[in-house]
Every structure is written in C-alpha cells, then in structure tokens.
Image 1: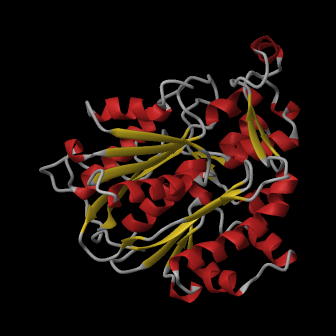
Image 2 (image 1 turned 180 degrees about the vertical axis):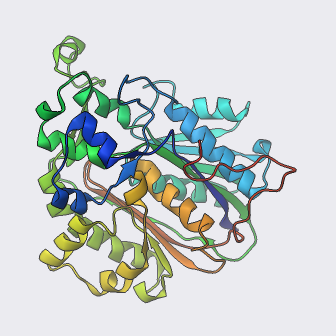
Length: 373
C-alpha cells in the first residue's frame, strides 16, 4: 500500500502588505537588513490600522482544504482523516482541527492536531502516511495554518512608528499569515511518500523562538499585568547562528532515511532556503557540505512574497510550485523544515504523483489559487 499526493491547496488572506506600507506603521528597516531577510510583502488577517481580523485561522485552513479538494476532484465526504498543524490556534480548546472539521461539513472523521511551527506540517504528513498505510483510512487532508499577525499588530498599533524598537521591527517585517494543505490517498499505485526523518536537537539549548502568554506556566494575574498578554519573542542572533547546523544535520538525516543521494533530488522545498542571511551563514560556518552544494540550486521557496508562515510555509510553497509547473509526475521532491522554537527539523523525500495542475472545470467548485481573496 502506498500513500500518494493527489493535489495541494493554499490560501493567503487579504491584500498583500508591502514593505513601504508596513514602514508607515512600524518604521523602516535598513536596506541591507531588508535584503537579508528577503521578505518584500506578506498577508495578514489583522488589519494594521484597526487590529480587527478579516478571517480566523480555522477559516484559512478551510479555504486551503477546499482548494486541495477542488484541485483533486475529490468530494469532501471521502475524507477519513484530518491532520492539522498550527502554533497559533483559534482557542486552546477545542482543538482547531475540530473547527476545521465543522467548516468542511464532516460529521465524523479522525482528527489530529500537532502544536508546532515550521516542522509540524512534515510531522503531520508522516503521521497521516502511517495511519493510511495501516488501513485505518483511505483519504486524508494534512494542513499547516498560521495567523501570526494578531501577535504583531499590538507591538505598533497606536504608537509612533519611531518608537518601535529595531529588534521588534525584524519580526514585524518577517512574518505572514496563510494556510496550505495536501490531499493524500492510499492506493496500490507507484511512488508517493517515503518515511520521514524528524528530530528535536535543542536539548540543553534555550528556545530560539517563544510565544509567551496565554498558557499555564505563569499565574494569570501576572500575565494580565504584563505589557502584552501574548508576546512573540525571537532570538535573532541565535537563530542565524544555529539554523545552518540544524539544516545540515536535517539534510543528512532525511537523505539517509530516504536512501537517496542529494543529486537524485529534483526539487527541494526548504522555507527560507534562498534567504541571504542563511546562505551567508552557511558559508561562514563552513557548512557548504556536498549535500547542500548539490541541493542549493534546486531550492524552491516563496519567502519574498508571503513572509515566514510557520507550519504553513512548506505546503504553501509546495502548492505554488505545483501550480507554477515546477513539479512533474515522477520528480523526487524533498520537503525540509527547520523550526527555531526548540531547534527541530522534519523532512522527507517523496516521489511526486499529482497530475499536472489544471484549473477545475466549470462543473465543480473552483480551487482557490495562492493569494486569492
């Protein structure tokens, strides 16, 4: 029994916010810093002027799933399993995946939610593969969905842009919201998903990223007295220093698990893989390994146009690559995500099985292309 990708889908909320517009709210970044982080525009559910939300995280996930189902020509009621990953759920309870189930109109299905960032989607893909291969179901949707902007807007709203600290501006310029989904089916066909490799390699290291507040680690009265109830904290220096070594270890582990040489990979979906800060740090750290040198010109990512989107980054980029004609049946496609929250990586190599992308016919619901509103 093999588990194969039938289609993908994605959704980005609202109109894109470019750097010039953002500078009016939060102040500018130096041009060399902008070039390093690479992001030129992003999509947010939170209005930078009012703070009001245009959509919820569950809404984004639903739209991405509807896009994947339409592109794959599969009725919603054939879905046996929903696996959703997010670090920014609508509520602590119920799990957001159950809200997604409601939006899809499924009265009953198996649901799993993974609380993680960038690495979570690939972990979810592996969980779905194992469950479908066991015969527990035939069709699954795996979704990564993030809404980070609600944590960002309070940093600058109703403040003079000149008073926003430079270290806060880095996060404001870096992150975007969005959702991506992959439709899987277990059948006897060739190709499909191979076993994934994933590890947390952060033992003994402080987190590189934290979302502090809203949990149970600190008494609620202390949280309410804080400057912000929920605060996104990114250790920019350690993220830049440590990420290259995590990528290097992840590449070797993923290729070893797949039993393939780097040269055999046709496309590598690696969020931020072309970012200047990363490529320069790889060189400075002496981590231009044979694997990296073989793969760096095969990297597909879309950080420039969507920003860093956490658990949604891999499926959003995968969807764009498929719809742009970069992926063809039989291609060996590597997915690799590195998460700075506690230094995790997750990756896999799969043989691409989805048909060449074609817009759905007029006889059925149209897919939502990346960036559609």
